[in-house]
Amino acid sequence: MTRKTSRKRLGTQSTEQIAKEYASKLLLEQQIANTKFKSTNQRNLYWAIKNNDVSIATGPAGTGKTFVALWACISLLLNHPEKYTKIVLMKPYVEAGEKLGFLPGGVKDKMDPYIISYYWCLDQIIGKDLYQQLMFKKQIEVMPMGLIRGITFQGCLVILDESQNTSPEQMKTFITRLGQDSKMIILGDEKQSDVKQNISGLTDIREKLFGLPNVSITIFDNEDVVRHSLVKKILDRYDDCEWMEEQAKIRGYINE
Image (cartoon, rainbow, N blue to C red; front, side, top):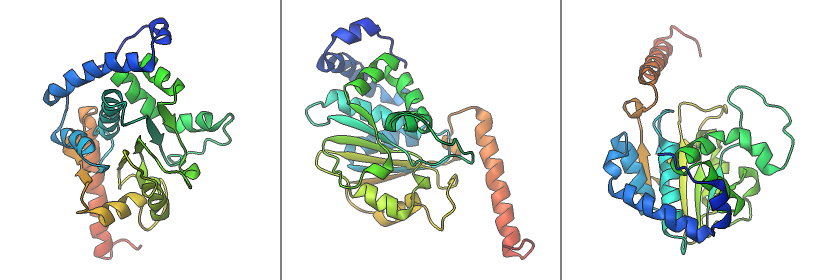
Protein backbone atom coordinates (compact mmCIF):
# COMPACT_ATOMS: atom_id res chain seq x y z
CA MET A 1 0.00 0.00 0.00
CA THR A 2 3.02 2.30 -0.11
CA ARG A 3 2.63 5.20 -2.49
CA LYS A 4 5.66 6.13 -4.63
CA THR A 5 5.69 9.74 -5.85
CA SER A 6 8.60 11.79 -7.09
CA ARG A 7 9.84 14.43 -4.65
CA LYS A 8 10.39 16.90 -7.51
CA ARG A 9 6.79 16.56 -8.74
CA LEU A 10 5.40 16.97 -5.21
CA GLY A 11 7.40 20.17 -4.79
CA THR A 12 5.63 21.81 -7.74
CA GLN A 13 2.11 20.63 -6.93
CA SER A 14 -0.36 22.46 -4.73
CA THR A 15 -1.82 20.64 -1.76
CA GLU A 16 -5.18 20.59 -3.55
CA GLN A 17 -3.63 18.87 -6.58
CA ILE A 18 -1.92 16.33 -4.34
CA ALA A 19 -5.15 15.78 -2.45
CA LYS A 20 -7.15 15.19 -5.63
CA GLU A 21 -4.63 12.68 -6.93
CA TYR A 22 -4.49 10.66 -3.74
CA ALA A 23 -8.13 11.11 -2.80
CA SER A 24 -9.22 9.27 -5.93
CA LYS A 25 -6.95 6.35 -5.05
CA LEU A 26 -8.09 6.24 -1.44
CA LEU A 27 -11.74 6.48 -2.50
CA LEU A 28 -11.27 3.51 -4.81
CA GLU A 29 -9.62 1.53 -2.02
CA GLN A 30 -12.48 2.38 0.34
CA GLN A 31 -14.83 0.72 -2.12
CA ILE A 32 -12.85 -2.50 -1.88
CA ALA A 33 -12.16 -2.05 1.84
CA ASN A 34 -13.18 -5.62 2.66
CA THR A 35 -10.03 -6.88 0.96
CA LYS A 36 -7.82 -4.41 2.83
CA PHE A 37 -8.78 -5.04 6.44
CA LYS A 38 -7.16 -7.95 8.20
CA SER A 39 -9.80 -8.36 10.89
CA THR A 40 -13.44 -7.54 11.53
CA ASN A 41 -12.45 -5.12 14.29
CA GLN A 42 -10.17 -3.22 11.92
CA ARG A 43 -13.14 -2.72 9.62
CA ASN A 44 -15.34 -1.78 12.60
CA LEU A 45 -12.84 0.84 13.78
CA TYR A 46 -12.43 2.34 10.30
CA TRP A 47 -16.16 2.91 9.85
CA ALA A 48 -16.57 3.97 13.48
CA ILE A 49 -14.10 6.80 12.86
CA LYS A 50 -15.94 7.79 9.69
CA ASN A 51 -19.33 7.84 11.44
CA ASN A 52 -18.56 9.21 14.93
CA ASP A 53 -16.86 12.27 16.39
CA VAL A 54 -15.15 10.34 19.20
CA SER A 55 -13.76 6.85 18.62
CA ILE A 56 -12.07 4.76 21.30
CA ALA A 57 -10.15 1.60 20.46
CA THR A 58 -8.45 -0.55 23.05
CA GLY A 59 -6.70 -3.89 22.75
CA PRO A 60 -3.34 -5.65 22.40
CA ALA A 61 -0.37 -4.37 20.47
CA GLY A 62 -0.13 -5.53 16.87
CA THR A 63 -3.84 -5.37 16.04
CA GLY A 64 -3.50 -2.45 13.60
CA LYS A 65 -5.29 0.22 15.64
CA THR A 66 -2.85 3.01 14.78
CA PHE A 67 -2.64 2.05 11.12
CA VAL A 68 -6.42 1.94 10.66
CA ALA A 69 -6.90 5.25 12.51
CA LEU A 70 -4.34 6.98 10.30
CA TRP A 71 -5.80 5.39 7.17
CA ALA A 72 -9.27 6.71 8.04
CA CYS A 73 -7.96 10.19 8.91
CA ILE A 74 -5.83 10.51 5.76
CA SER A 75 -8.86 9.49 3.71
CA LEU A 76 -11.04 12.10 5.44
CA LEU A 77 -8.40 14.83 5.10
CA LEU A 78 -7.81 14.28 1.39
CA ASN A 79 -11.42 13.58 0.43
CA HIS A 80 -12.97 16.39 2.51
CA PRO A 81 -10.52 19.34 2.51
CA GLU A 82 -13.47 21.73 2.85
CA LYS A 83 -14.19 20.31 6.32
CA TYR A 84 -10.92 19.01 7.75
CA THR A 85 -7.78 21.16 7.70
CA LYS A 86 -5.25 18.95 9.47
CA ILE A 87 -4.39 15.75 11.30
CA VAL A 88 -2.94 16.19 14.80
CA LEU A 89 -0.77 13.37 16.14
CA MET A 90 -0.36 13.00 19.90
CA LYS A 91 1.16 10.60 22.41
CA PRO A 92 1.90 10.87 26.12
CA TYR A 93 5.53 11.84 26.72
CA VAL A 94 6.40 8.56 28.46
CA GLU A 95 9.26 6.12 27.85
CA ALA A 96 8.58 2.37 27.80
CA GLY A 97 10.73 1.39 30.76
CA GLU A 98 13.87 3.18 29.51
CA LYS A 99 14.89 6.82 29.99
CA LEU A 100 16.03 8.66 26.87
CA GLY A 101 17.36 11.64 28.81
CA PHE A 102 17.51 15.20 27.48
CA LEU A 103 16.57 15.52 23.82
CA PRO A 104 17.80 18.55 21.83
CA GLY A 105 15.77 20.63 19.38
CA GLY A 106 12.25 22.00 19.20
CA VAL A 107 8.93 20.37 20.07
CA LYS A 108 8.84 18.17 16.95
CA ASP A 109 12.48 17.07 17.46
CA LYS A 110 11.76 16.11 21.06
CA MET A 111 8.53 14.29 20.14
CA ASP A 112 9.84 12.40 17.08
CA PRO A 113 11.35 9.44 19.02
CA TYR A 114 7.98 8.92 20.74
CA ILE A 115 5.84 9.08 17.61
CA ILE A 116 8.00 7.15 15.15
CA SER A 117 5.25 4.51 14.89
CA TYR A 118 3.02 7.17 13.30
CA TYR A 119 5.67 7.85 10.64
CA TRP A 120 6.06 4.16 9.84
CA CYS A 121 2.31 3.84 9.30
CA LEU A 122 2.12 7.02 7.20
CA ASP A 123 4.97 5.73 5.04
CA GLN A 124 3.00 2.55 4.32
CA ILE A 125 -0.28 4.37 3.64
CA ILE A 126 0.75 7.35 1.47
CA GLY A 127 4.53 7.20 1.18
CA LYS A 128 7.26 9.31 2.77
CA ASP A 129 7.17 12.07 0.14
CA LEU A 130 3.48 12.84 0.59
CA TYR A 131 3.38 12.73 4.38
CA GLN A 132 6.45 14.99 4.56
CA GLN A 133 4.76 17.37 2.14
CA LEU A 134 1.62 17.42 4.30
CA MET A 135 3.72 18.01 7.41
CA PHE A 136 5.56 20.87 5.70
CA LYS A 137 2.19 22.46 4.88
CA LYS A 138 1.04 21.94 8.52
CA GLN A 139 -1.71 19.53 7.42
CA ILE A 140 -0.16 16.89 9.64
CA GLU A 141 1.09 18.23 12.96
CA VAL A 142 2.68 16.75 16.07
CA MET A 143 1.54 18.15 19.42
CA PRO A 144 2.52 17.20 22.99
CA MET A 145 -0.31 16.80 25.47
CA GLY A 146 1.25 19.34 27.80
CA LEU A 147 0.52 22.17 25.36
CA ILE A 148 -3.20 21.64 24.70
CA ARG A 149 -4.70 23.75 27.48
CA GLY A 150 -6.57 26.69 26.01
CA ILE A 151 -6.76 25.04 22.57
CA THR A 152 -9.96 24.13 20.75
CA PHE A 153 -9.47 21.73 17.84
CA GLN A 154 -11.55 23.09 14.94
CA GLY A 155 -11.63 21.14 11.68
CA CYS A 156 -9.06 18.69 13.03
CA LEU A 157 -8.63 14.94 13.06
CA VAL A 158 -6.85 14.25 16.35
CA ILE A 159 -5.27 10.89 17.16
CA LEU A 160 -4.08 10.13 20.68
CA ASP A 161 -2.12 6.87 20.77
CA GLU A 162 -0.75 5.00 23.82
CA SER A 163 -3.51 6.65 25.81
CA GLN A 164 -3.19 4.06 28.58
CA ASN A 165 -0.27 6.22 29.75
CA THR A 166 -2.52 9.21 30.49
CA SER A 167 -4.15 9.98 33.81
CA PRO A 168 -7.92 10.53 34.04
CA GLU A 169 -7.21 14.24 34.52
CA GLN A 170 -5.08 14.43 31.36
CA MET A 171 -7.73 12.55 29.39
CA LYS A 172 -10.45 14.93 30.58
CA THR A 173 -8.33 17.88 29.46
CA PHE A 174 -7.78 16.22 26.08
CA ILE A 175 -11.35 15.22 25.28
CA THR A 176 -12.76 18.63 26.22
CA ARG A 177 -10.64 20.27 23.48
CA LEU A 178 -13.05 18.85 20.86
CA GLY A 179 -14.41 21.61 18.60
CA GLN A 180 -16.68 21.88 15.58
CA ASP A 181 -15.99 19.74 12.48
CA SER A 182 -13.44 17.66 14.38
CA LYS A 183 -12.93 14.06 15.35
CA MET A 184 -10.92 12.53 18.17
CA ILE A 185 -9.53 9.02 18.05
CA ILE A 186 -8.24 7.51 21.31
CA LEU A 187 -6.08 4.37 21.05
CA GLY A 188 -4.28 2.19 23.55
CA ASP A 189 -3.77 -1.09 25.34
CA GLU A 190 -5.05 -1.12 28.92
CA LYS A 191 -2.70 -3.99 29.80
CA GLN A 192 0.44 -2.19 28.63
CA SER A 193 0.66 0.93 30.77
CA ASP A 194 4.11 2.40 31.49
CA VAL A 195 2.71 4.58 34.29
CA LYS A 196 1.82 3.22 37.71
CA GLN A 197 -1.65 4.51 38.61
CA ASN A 198 -4.91 3.14 39.97
CA ILE A 199 -6.78 3.69 36.70
CA SER A 200 -5.56 4.95 33.33
CA GLY A 201 -7.15 7.74 31.37
CA LEU A 202 -8.06 5.20 28.69
CA THR A 203 -9.97 2.92 31.07
CA ASP A 204 -11.62 5.90 32.73
CA ILE A 205 -12.90 7.47 29.51
CA ARG A 206 -14.01 4.14 28.06
CA GLU A 207 -16.18 3.58 31.13
CA LYS A 208 -17.47 7.16 31.35
CA LEU A 209 -18.38 7.58 27.66
CA PHE A 210 -19.94 4.15 27.15
CA GLY A 211 -23.38 4.51 25.58
CA LEU A 212 -23.04 8.19 24.64
CA PRO A 213 -24.31 9.11 21.16
CA ASN A 214 -21.65 9.88 18.53
CA VAL A 215 -19.07 7.93 20.56
CA SER A 216 -17.82 4.52 19.44
CA ILE A 217 -15.85 1.94 21.41
CA THR A 218 -14.02 -0.87 19.62
CA ILE A 219 -12.47 -3.65 21.71
CA PHE A 220 -9.67 -5.64 20.03
CA ASP A 221 -8.39 -8.93 21.43
CA ASN A 222 -5.56 -11.38 20.77
CA GLU A 223 -7.45 -12.89 17.84
CA ASP A 224 -7.05 -9.54 16.02
CA VAL A 225 -3.23 -9.53 16.14
CA VAL A 226 -1.86 -9.11 12.61
CA ARG A 227 1.88 -9.11 13.33
CA HIS A 228 3.97 -12.28 13.25
CA SER A 229 1.78 -15.29 14.05
CA LEU A 230 3.94 -15.94 17.12
CA VAL A 231 2.89 -12.61 18.69
CA LYS A 232 -0.65 -13.87 19.33
CA LYS A 233 0.71 -16.99 21.03
CA ILE A 234 3.08 -14.89 23.13
CA LEU A 235 0.24 -12.60 24.23
CA ASP A 236 -1.89 -15.63 25.10
CA ARG A 237 0.93 -16.99 27.24
CA TYR A 238 1.37 -13.66 29.04
CA ASP A 239 -2.39 -13.51 29.67
CA ASP A 240 -2.33 -17.05 31.06
CA CYS A 241 0.53 -16.14 33.44
CA GLU A 242 -1.29 -13.01 34.62
CA TRP A 243 -4.45 -15.05 35.23
CA MET A 244 -2.48 -17.69 37.18
CA GLU A 245 -0.80 -14.98 39.29
CA GLU A 246 -4.16 -13.36 40.05
CA GLN A 247 -5.63 -16.71 41.09
CA ALA A 248 -2.63 -17.36 43.33
CA LYS A 249 -3.17 -13.98 45.04
CA ILE A 250 -6.84 -14.77 45.58
CA ARG A 251 -5.94 -18.09 47.19
CA GLY A 252 -3.28 -16.47 49.38
CA TYR A 253 -0.31 -18.21 47.74
CA ILE A 254 1.22 -14.85 46.83
CA ASN A 255 1.27 -11.77 49.05
CA GLU A 256 0.26 -8.44 47.53
